[in-house]
Image 1 (tube, rainbow, N blue to C red):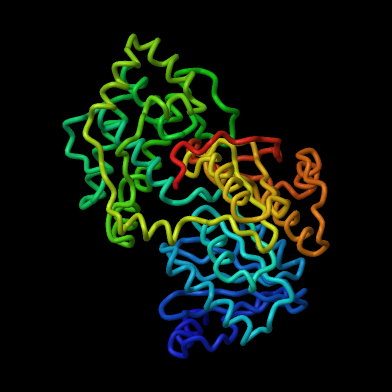
Image 2 (image 1 turned 90 degrees about the horizontal axis):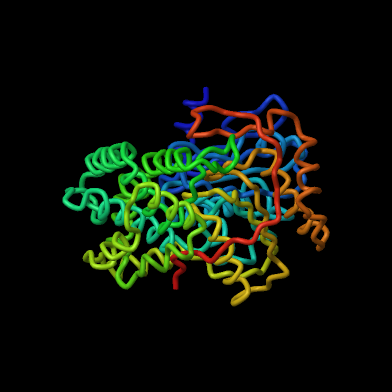
Amino acid sequence: MRTAVAAALALAGVLGVPAAARADDVAVYSGTFDGLPYKAEVPARWNGTLLLYSNVNDQQILLASYPESEQWLLDHHYALAAASTTDVRATLQGQRSMLDWFDSHIGKPRRTISWGQSLGGVSAVLLAERQPWRFDGVGTLCAPLGGLISTWNSFLDLNFATKTLLAPDSDWRLVHVTDPDGDTAEQQRIVQTAQQTPQGRARLALANAVAGAPAWFSPLHPHPTDLAEEINQLAHFDTSMFPISGGSLRQTYEQTAGGNASWNTGVDYGHLLTMSTERDLVVKAYRAAGLSLAKDLRTLARTPRIAADPGAVAYQYRYGTPQGHTSWPVVTLHTTGDGASQVEHEREYADQVRRNGDPAELRELFVDRGWHCTYTASEELVALQALLHRVDTGQWGDLRPATLNTAAGRLPAAYQQVLSWYDGAWGQVTPNFIHYRPAPLPRAFP
């Protein structure tokens, strides 16, 4: 039945007929806009608020980060919609088409919220900044709001330092990727070999520190304090992240942007180390290995650098850098141990809002937990409720961590789960909102 409806929708373009009806009287719509898939779910007793979710993912269309969050929102009569791909530019196009379709086929929402996760969180902000009249609020979850140029520069720093210090003669290509699978195999060989010696482990710690990556990969455990465990978590981070930081995704982004949008010309890695929250770990690891940190920093300083392609930088600036405009309230949510989209992006975004928007319209929430997007469904919903309260009442509610944790803790156990790549399993956690002030973003741009 679903296959037949999907085929009919593809032939009909964007007719928007229901693709299915849920048992709880939620109409489900799906189809494509010029080849971009979309989905919408509308409760029979819709409350007039549309939550437009951006999740840059061509494998499936998500309407929230967790099924539990999606169901809670539908049960409370919110309409959900999304159109997504792996390309921010195409996502912006698809989401605008989604809004047009919704207005024409369901009805103009009383309120519209743009929200999204990770790269989709950047898309959610860009979408609202470019068409501010269409939105009433913005929510972003674990997003690199300091811009994708800063993100790719940090990834380059990680891989440049790893190759320079551990395998300078390797044929691993850091940019202009042509063989992502081969590069991934080579990078993982280098990291796994480095783990076998104190010297290799120390250099892994340095490479991660200059990239701003915390030694906290497990969301199910506190930040490690044992040197061996810290290095072990960094190695897991490196091997898990490489398909994103330097393999297939880098190749995709270079193809999309028309070249390499990251560089390290003029970068002082000694200065980046002094900025790093993991500087003490590096000093401790080098002392244990009997290595000279100053010597390795000199090696990084004299190694030939990598320049960016100006056209690719311009593309990433246009399609990956929020400007900080706030025609509506914004709530952000970030885990403190995020190594893929460093928590320091929140500080850079707040600076952008101070320059170009109104800081009174921004609230940044933090969860003390390791790794990327490891907030729970309960924490996601509490952050979203904070935004909806501000949109509905014109006032910010009580956003003290203790209040937020109490609210999140009222939700059932199924809402308190996170997936740990490090442990390879889902686990139960306790709501953990905290007060937090991020350090400066290591490679802020411009």
